[in-house]
Image (cartoon, rainbow, N blue to C red; front, side, top):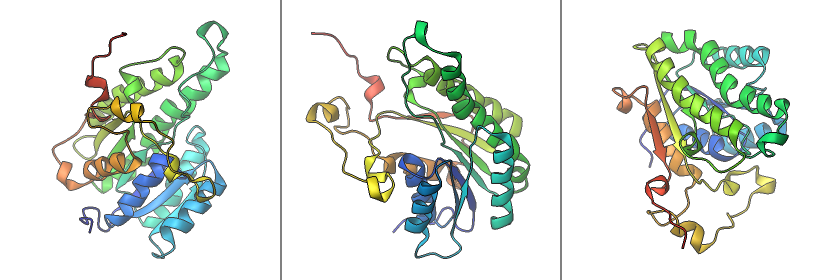
Length: 260
């Protein structure tokens, strides 16, 4: 039985059609929140609302839109406030997830800008339009960044830059919106998300022993791991926590790796 730390609160989760966003929405519902699921993919929104809201009429609402388009952002926030009579929690999870693009010399400006618009500007726009409503309810923002804010593979300049930007944006927002609104970020490492895809595409993660062994905890992460941390940060239990980024990676970024 989950603790009902979010009873009666209204949460907006972007990128909630699948993966980590869908798992966060599910956990928030278990914790007693009413949740608006936002995604650019209409089919994913419909599937998520049907799955998560089938037993709880009035607890789940779906909105389709892009966080990179300001008119969509305003419509998403307005629809949430109208449906929920307010807003307590914003989870900025929507992102262009593929961290790699062509080599730097071949990268098009449009490749860079597309990732910036969705991952970083989208987080900013959602926060800006939600802020007035969150202030009224002494709410919280949880931003999803990545361990790629702190470490990289080749050819992920745009993705890494946006995730690093979200870390900085998080502490900037915490100072701008405090004390009315707390703002924190979660930096997931390797999270296997296939079990939280839309139901028609859902499958167990395809993982090898060596994948798990790279992590000091002995396994690859699950969306549920991230959702549990998000629920804590959104709740009053984290009332003295703001401006922070929490790495959740099974210890992978603490492990020294040497070629043999």
